[in-house]
Image (cartoon, rainbow, N blue to C red; front, top):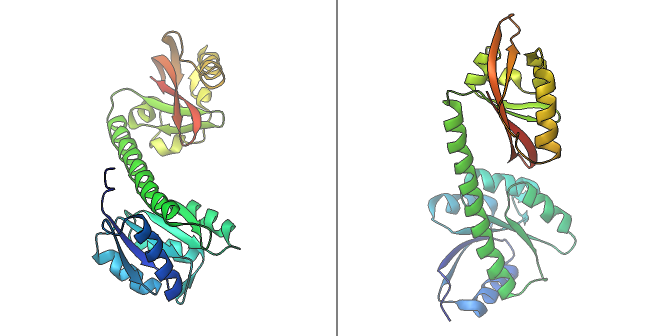
Length: 248
């Protein structure tokens, strides 16, 4: 069997017995590829985390100088690019879930895991963290391209405009793209434009398919200008919900 890649863990745990148990459980899996560095307080853990290249931080939520979600926030602020797994007591599973919402990749309940589960959880946390980083970078590259695109690009859902690029703002007569957020997209159209937008939203948001073709219509800017445009719309998933991407 192929040996797992080496794993450098920062264990932030003030209870010597619990820290020893973590080391023993990991040693049962493979003590040649797993290295554990210990810290007994949040302050010590933050200092070591900043100075060391750790693959993952295993963080107890009950430390002498910090408790609960404040511990997660503090460690996440110190090492935002290092995956974080929290340790909770048997009665604190809800806190573990909240810790994941606060930026942790996963949580483990003390006394309710073995070496295999601990090892697997830590390695999966690293994989999820890397996947999340790749998604963030992809979104940032996409946003950068959209910001300089010559076409107007607008993201719309059932509640209104969620995003518009500078080209769209110029077409729609807005001084800043951010001013368009939460506004009803159809309100910026005249003649048959509002019906075109309504039909497009029905097709994209409720039927989950792109418009069959481009439609020529007219934008009516707040300053009274009328601009002839071609409208296309396709479905996209953004911020965990279905949106319609309009290209003008």
